[in-house]
Amino acid sequence: MNNIFKLLAPGLKIKRYLLLSLLGLLLAFGGIILVIGIKYFYNFAVLIKNFLYYISNSFTGIVLGVVCVVLGIFIFCLGMAFLFRSLMRPYMTQNDPKLVEMLFEERVLSRGPKIAAIGGGTGLSTLLRGLKEYSSNITAIVAVSDDGGSSGRLRKDFNISAPGDIRNCILALAKTESLMHDLFQYRFEAGELSGHSFGNLFLVAMAEVSGSFVEGVKQSQNVLAVTGKVLPSSTDVITLNGVMEDDSILKGETTIADSPKKIKKVFIKPRNAHAMAETVSAILDADIVVLGPGSLYTSVLPNLLVPDILEALKKTKAKKLYVVNMMTQPGETDYFTASDHVKAIYAHTKSKILDAVLVNKSKMGKELLEKYAEKGSYPVIQDIDELKALGVEVIAENFTFHTELARHDSKELGYAVIKYIAKSSIKK
Image 1 (cartoon, one colour):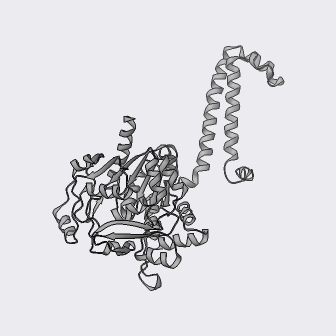
Image 2 (cartoon, rainbow, N blue to C red):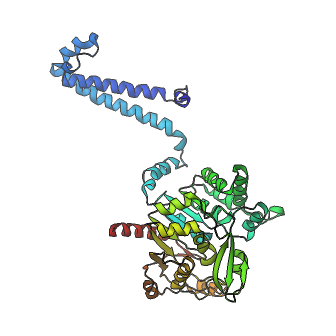
Image 3 (cartoon, rainbow, N blue to C red):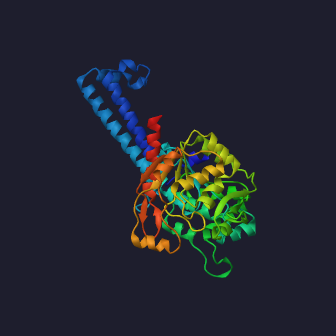
């Protein structure tokens, strides 16, 4: 109530426009009386009843009434326009499109499909940048098993989940200016903070202040005005383990990825890691669940090995779409075809959980291919017939973002997902 009275404080330029609008309403009301006749308003203002009765029964009164109605409506609209401009002035500066963004998100994006996107690394953040153009009902479910670089050091020092991939996904969905984006991605190069990004440190600080890593992630999203939600795949600190081709077991995501041995399968510890109820609900309520793109064994599968998430994926009525990587990953998916990726997901989940697979059919330049070949990375073979034999619908489009890296184009990827949702809805 106190905040309402504050609107009437001097200097806000609100009272005058409210009064102007009120005057317009009164004038329009008086005009209506003149037009339709006083006999319907016998209880209105005894002192002016006789005057209005006399004039309302004349042609002059009708003309005067019409003029009053038109003028009253004009004054009312003028007052409301000034009032709106006064209230919205903080959001309508020349270089700040906040108001337009707020209205667009509220009226358009809030009606968009419910999307649960599962993965990690740069692949998931690429997908999120494309999806946020179509919906604000996005929940990003992010792998937290990374134990390398800044994330690994912070995991060890603070016994928290890896913040790096979560930071990237928050920034992908955030409505931030370029300076804020650059600040959160800034990486220190000297001293004890060398190698740490400011965003990772910010997430850790928020976790310490708020009492938990999950709560720290939520509070960080409030600070950055995120479109949708970013949630860790588990509330537990997860360690990824890999069973290699010689049956040896390697501990830690970085150790597994760096090993020259071929990965047979991966598992997490604790095996009974828990997911947030909010994460499970997002999957169950979604219109579509998108897996990937991202490293198969170290970004996508760790999420699916959380029992609560896997159970939700089996129960949800949402369509489940897997985005296959463009390139094989040395030491992880060497010589893998698109169907090999799907088979690995089925083997780890012990279920055929996918409805569709999205693959890239565009060709890459010779120089780019040679650059990747030097690192032992090659385009993933899109064996369409084998994919169809696995019972999935295949969506083949041109998704290459032509830079020095083989990456999906965010806009094209987001559009393909939305198009698939629309197509699936029509079939229903």
